[in-house]
Image (cartoon, rainbow, N blue to C red; front, side):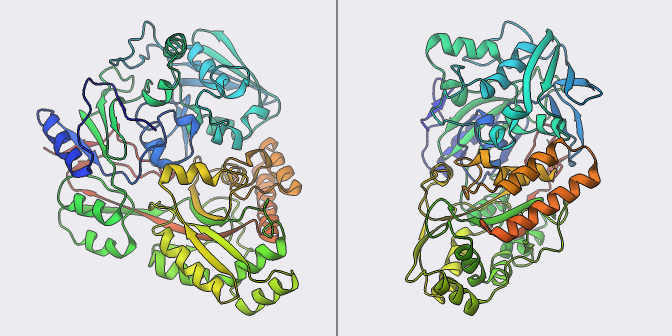
Length: 539
């Protein structure tokens, strides 16, 4: 990703401390400035292209809105840019009435000539559906990760403009979670007028580099791997935010983030190391909030590559790893052992599944019986802390030691966060990758389809695993409206996944968020995002 800005001069420092110093000097005259010490750089600013919270926090939750939204602190669906909707008796047509009087943001690089309307909805969705669109592959990435994982291209037959402020989603099949899907980050609404301007000028990539939305904050500048700056949107339809300037101070190292928080260089800093939590709670200047996360950490094999294409090999490797020791050491009381991809706090969790049992002797025997000797493999470790995984490097080291006991030699590899995510999606990936996810809407389809639907191979399906019984169940779960039947469907899918072992579930974490006591009105989100539009600061 290149360096870019909407100002004549960027914040001119390469080190974070220098960037913060310049930011501080720049905004000193502002009434209220909130600095958020984020844990990683965004992959870009077109939220529909990506699937990480570090990217969505810096794009979807700041610059953009969606047709439907999640009520703060819940998974309840509420109106967004669609103020109301009606659903046909056969559940195949959703007519959404769009909010009137909504303004797109004014920036140095774009001045809108009209308000938000149905054309913007059609552009935002059809660019992900229509493979002939000049916007379908404008970045060269080749897919729309979350849109494809949710199989929206199969679900949606067409989107019809009824009038300037009404759109109709016509479906190929009923979908019990459609309104929740519209609230996902692939549903951000972009300006069709801005896109036309970029296409005409030959600067299509600026859609990902210089975002324009209807959201609470206007993008100002980004210095790669250092700082992102936003200003409050004075024309926001939901009311101008209470803070005037929002700054993301990108601070990858967890210890450094917490030091900056204590020093007052930022007011909110996510994902502390578990060992640091008690010290943060003891600091009289801080507030520490926590809640069980709708998340899971895992290690995914590449089932397209031998010998990981054999279920008996995957199961043997899983049995060789002491997952409980990892949870005890890495999470230190802020996590629990994961048995499936569905967290225990989410409906349809299958509590009968106990996951792989640690048994190195049996693991060694199974590898011998599978004809696997002197296996060398790679385990990929994330370079950043995530809400579901505090320390991937140390986790990989513990796995390395366990696997050595059964004769498997492990090389630990890592990359810069954006590169890590890009390379991990490669169908020819050499190695098992440590990753995780937080539910985007509280529906089990969102978690299980994201990980295991066949159409997401080469994208969010990091195991590159297509298993027809699971794929059929996930399809059935979408078109079934009866809650009891859906629960049974997803419970059965979890049984198949446990039986076939395309991955190793590791843990569900408790999410901890420390912040300055000056921060007011911050609501912790169960879906893992960080929202600032309602946040205020004491003087």
